[in-house]
Length: 211
Image (cartoon, rainbow, N blue to C red; front, side):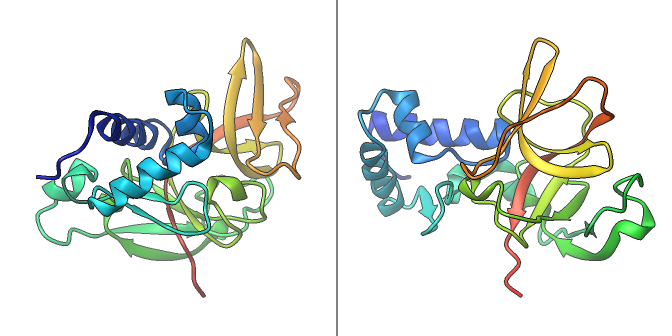
């Protein structure tokens, strides 16, 4: 059993909650803000200590590159009786006006282990562009998506505005819906009430496409 300090346990729980609620681990800045640290460097030191103890794995070069390991990983992983794989359709570029899972949008399908994700996904979406870069979601990545028609503030969603499908962080204030990028080069999208708008799903994980 890994022995953690009270502060390390607190940070580990924060990571678990973020993954459970949004499908993604928090950034160093978010951890620092949540726990009242003066800088993200303090959060980084605690994360490095957790990594040395084998509770998490840190991926270089991304602000959210934190993965839970061992007994701290998603319980689904330990409940899986052997390699129980599922087939997920891959959605490429979505044809204007067509349902996201329509045949013309399907590129191929992947056999994946559902234990990789915070919740069981329904499809994979190929990410286009760099608007979610600082959430660790890069151009060409495969986003695992669970079909939903509602979301909580702060969750990363796949949304349809008119004929466009986009991946953004969701925020609703009163009746105003905003879709927030994770890259300062991109603007917040405020959904026009007159526009056709729908949530196509919730991001529950990520697969990096190396080819």
